[in-house]
Length: 197
Image (cartoon, rainbow, N blue to C red; front, side, top):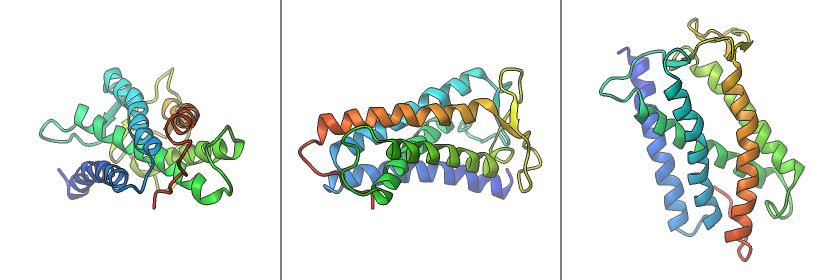
């Protein structure tokens, strides 16, 4: 395994472990309301729906650009990426709390949804730019066509940006946003929302 691939593999799992530590510690320390810790785990669960679906679709759909050793390439990588997805959703909450004034997440708000959706789409495009061809490769298929061709600076192994990963991050933030509104209403109506920093 080349040094860059080893670094990416170790970093993948180390950051997933850090995210769990960070959110659990903030909740236990009273710096994050109950809705937020539930939201992190819910985001992880939502992320696992496509992470494991993509795994079960097999290497004809998605495969690692480099095989990770010691059995870390299959479901362990998918668990790690699911945790990353949970943290990505939580950063969307944080952006709303930073950029919007007044009470947040008390009722439906187009601005909140717009930030969550814009962040989800942006980070997916950035992740594809940085990691497609270096960590993973989505194979172009008739039902998963390339919708954005390879752009300068992408990995030479990248086939471009395919439909399914982009579509996931158009739909998933909407599902997460409405689920988070429910969590806030159910668990935090009597306490103010806390920011993530």
